[in-house]
Image (cartoon, rainbow, N blue to C red; front, side):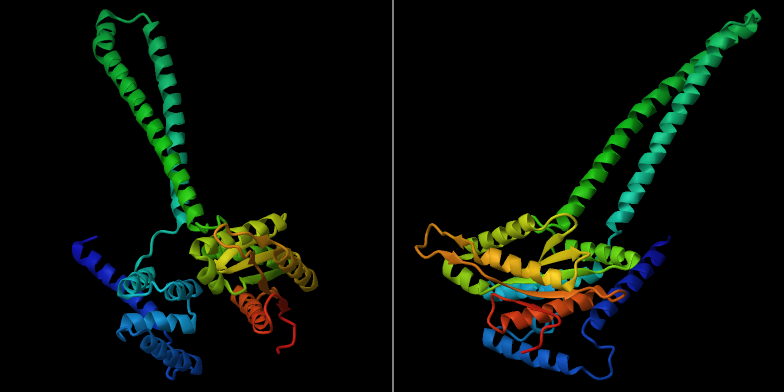
Length: 367
């Protein structure tokens, strides 16, 4: 590919990325939706309240909170606001992270792993084939030496042909050693890639799957449900008054609470059940082959289990009482998993707005 063609390809890719970024904010619609107008007004009010410059960067990030296009990003901005760490520098870092998602398009990890596996297989095949050919060549040389040949032919073989054959064999053996070392390095690279992939899907604080890991898990479970014509349930959990816990006990204790809840959920879920940290103080439980009623009962069991624990904080005389609210929904065959998450989120919202420390399901009447 020429330099000019490479430049043109980059331009096409960049233009595509920019278009995807622009479409994120509904600019392809002829008229703005009521929700986007409402989010825009809230964003401007929030910027004014923060006292920061109403720049495109601040507006974009604050708009993300109210529009919730990306829950992960919205939670990150909200966390910065809650911890009073939101400033120009923080905003710039988060904004760069947002934009980079649209300009950084690496080869999918699974594709890289497949390429490495294929390369490793080809190296192993060549080594096996080369060894076999070397053995046959050695046998032919031994056989040739057993024939009674004329002095001229024998002299030519001994002084010219055999040294060359031995040289080829020696170089081939050296290449074997190098390829074996390369095979080990390829295998190590593959292992490192798988390890990095697992880290990318794991929440660093709680050591359970993060939102990225959850997205992969729920798609796998939905695929199985679709093939088996079965269903599964989703429980969305949220720690009640978590901001108050951080304010009263400090963020280190807040982190301990998140780890504690993750451990509790992990110990109470068995078999094919899966858990993940959905974002912030929200967690999710996925229950394959579970009915709505059974999932509702599981959510209530978890709620009572958490409520029954009192956490002692060394620096405080007052114990920390932890409660959670939960929303329950079940998968409908053929639907987009985002719809399932949305119903569970609405049920969770209802639980939090009707007293907290309770479970609401998608079929509960809205209060």
